[in-house]
Length: 575
Image (cartoon, rainbow, N blue to C red; front, side):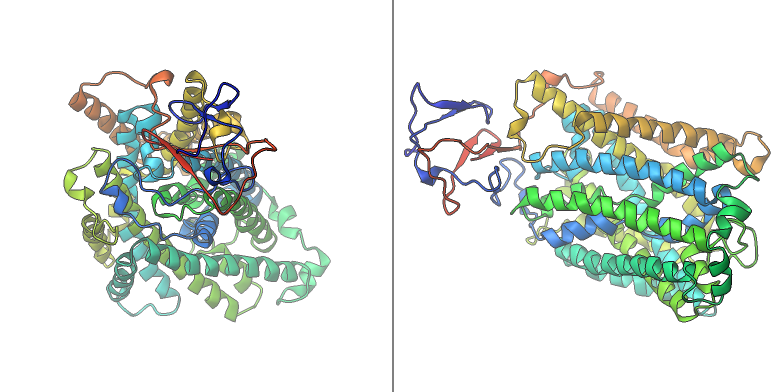
């Protein structure tokens, strides 16, 4: 940096671990500014050469689509029917509405950390270790990994069951083999294969839900459908009779149950943070901001608006809804029921096809997530070094082999008690999504606390959460509320006449016991009995991308064609 001059009259910008001085006489070749912040370069991390092999193949368009619809699967498209049946459409909207607020707040927190630390192994899986405590990172990351390892075979079985809508005579194992081979083929194209497949999978889901909302609106308006006269007479009749809330159940408990169920339908936004190491770093700030808008659209359009439309078309008393114990409850999806019950024949087949695509999308996400999380665990020292290795294309092949082997569990599709097997396996880690959301928000608060304790300016951040730490506190409160209400509903389920059911509790909350074992097991193994990292000891500089402000100086003519990166230790500073 010979072109940079230092003088007593220079302005100091504390942007690196050791604050540096920028002279008012610096030349234009020293700076690159765009929209008040610099553009990131595709730099490699200073540590962890093995992790450095990961290729930045996930583009901005992939990031937008991942944030909008990845993870949107049977939890919403099929499981929504169960929520409507037990709580009514009003209770379901309240549950999903509260979760939507929490997810948006959680995304803002994760977005700030992603932009500041875009190259941490496993994205948010490293936040627990870096900002809270290694034992927390170890516990949450392993629960998350186990959860997605189990979801892969579960979704493959679900996909084979979806085929029964058209043909009930062919063995499910045949379709399991086909779908299993498809997911494996996609996975061996690495992050590019995952992202490209998700782009088209998610696009089909978005088009289906958008088309459903439009068609549903036409049915409600009495324009199309076999029940046009009924809707012209009173389009909101199901909101009046049987009503918007299921009064046959305890209303508060039914809403609480919906709140828990909606968590598993709304997951997926964390994939933006999980895949950050393989995202293109060009215009990352702009890409993350756009992804934030997509998350809001996802929650309002894909979830709340489509649920509202269903409320006009399907009463909670419908015998076809999931969990109604009726022989008619075969196809389960309220989206299919809403259209089919109005005499429109071809559209339900299209919707069921998209549901199949959605299931395969979640299986694809599970393959990607489980393998990257296992690799991240190894990078952090939480799993054997054997899984740290990447091939020349930056793909964690060894981790993918593990996921593929666990995926073979899907071939129990013809086993009569398959559901019991998967319920037990999922109970081990089923709450990991809620734990992850809480951990991300706690990590965000700890990061901000550390920045303040170490006299770091928030102006160093390329992206700041618009809701700040207050949003993270609110999200944590909602997460705790979900866990408390979930415990209550699991111990005293709706269908048990107010009696305690420890069997039901263990199937839903075994993950808590597993988490406790993992947490204290790590403490015993490491002999580290502290419970958190002090704010002034948190390494906020290592692996962080630091952004400089525009230098408001008439003597400096800034050019977008020139750039300079100032490096200090493990910090990258862009000005």
